[in-house]
Amino acid sequence: MASVAIKIAKRYLLSRRKEAFINIITIISILGVAIGVVVINMTMAIMTGFEYELKKKILEVDAHVTIRRAGGNIPDWEGAQKKILEVPDLKGVSPFTFNQGLLRNDSASTGVLIRGVAPESDTAKELSGYLDGIDSGDALSTNTIQRATEYGTTETTILPSIVIGKELSLGMGIYPGMTVSVLSPQVGSTPLGLVPKFRRFYVSAVYKSGLVNYESSIAYVDLAEAQRFFRLGDQVSGFEIRVTEVDNAPILAKQIVEKFDPALGFYSQDWTTTNKPLWDAIKLEKNVYFIVLLLIIVMASFSIISTLVLLVLEKRGDIAVLRTIGATSGTVGKIFRIQGALIGGIGTVAGLVLGYLGCIALKEYGFPLDERIFPISEVPVRIELLNFAIVGLASFFICLLATIYPSRRASQLDPATVLRYE
Image 1 (cartoon, rainbow, N blue to C red):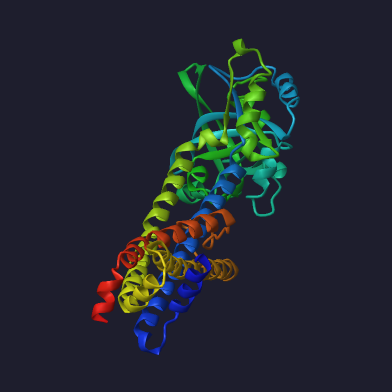
Image 2: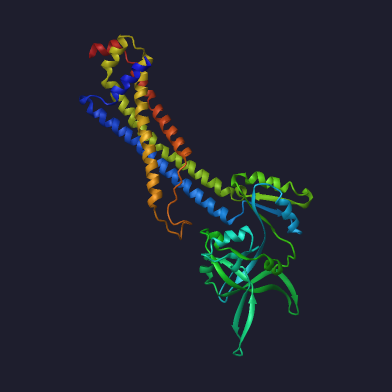
């Protein structure tokens, strides 16, 4: 009887001319499901694109794994670096220093984090990508400055370089070629008492990462210069490590720490824990969007219920005849469940196809964004088949739920009563 139920359901899907109104409602039901699936898929693709681009930008600026030592800096960092390199699947290990300072020009001052990086390190290479064609090695090198004196002569001054972010540059009116002062929180003893240590730096370049928080608070200098200025000797603040597979960062971080004696106080932070609140917020936002937009499918399912209820009322005579020739109530209910599944299935498949084409079109032609607000120039679109599969299954399941009431209504019709009044 299953094949008979399928044949009857297909025949009922597009009724005869006298039931044209039901045909229209059927088409509207299919379009409602399709539109809902399209909206959800495109929204999820855009949300996934934003997540991917943000993760990409953060991982370009931040390390995949950071190794530090509790309570202080790391002495004999070259020996520690050799131990770290014994761990497989590492792309690069870069020593760094990280200290607070006060950056000043003639009109303003602001607190910044001074990051010392080695010019040949992976961190410096990543920085080169934000310098508009300027090599980070050149940007971090010392500069010879010709300065006019009060006696009308010129003198030559050698200044270390500093690379600042675009937001900091615009906020303080500091541009390449200018000089700034950096004050250290450490103090030195002078005949006038204890005064903070400061040094003049030459602004060699401005980096643009697209992340405002980084650009406004982090500046880069040469590692050796940072060690001298902050009186670190041969110590570093930690190591920035990049791995071949970013998803394996938590496992590799644990393996690296196990290379050291626990008494030394080494600890690790991988990118998943450093930005955990951000990733959790993005995940929650995606889930909320999915649930809210799924209500569009729920609304379309009410149209399916209406279509099937009207069809049950229209086909009462057929149902009564089927029952009298031996069809069970289960077979009758199956007819309308199959028809509802066909409506939901056609709408879902059409929505998946149109949603995919819509994502391709949006990715191809783009939608511009204000770079002053967003870290990217156009709406990012990332198509993941898993998202499409989840949306398709959820949509089809909701459409199946919509068939429960009409199919039960059809299966409970009394054939004798129906035939008496037909």
